[in-house]
Length: 152
Image 1 (cartoon, helix red, strand yellow):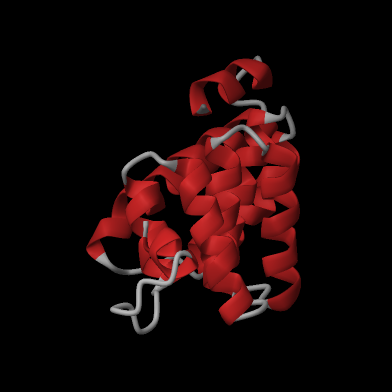
Image 2: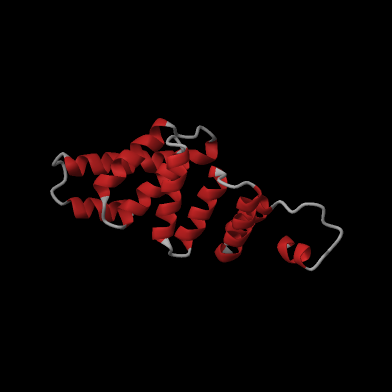
């Protein structure tokens, strides 16, 4: 990890890209290490919404969902249109049994949904989930808790 090289004085390193390092570690499933890298990236760019969203993803993956939700809410205070924060928070709310609170976040995500091809899977998931939740709230499904189980 570049952090250790910098810590122990490897002079060959100019500047460590902690964000990129965090993304790579997250992709490798090294969530705690990724969290460390993202925290270091946040020191270099305090309040950066993209870094904060990556931190929230790490929190979610290691089971710290309350911290993840707080982090997503912090991002949304700074940028109410942050699609990723709405998406992440919506699914945390669903998993914690609060589907009605998830609906406005799914709507906000879809209103500002990313258009890149790799995001289309998430956009479709949000659309499907929102349709199921709306059906549950309008009486189309007799058991909303069953609808919630289907969404997770």
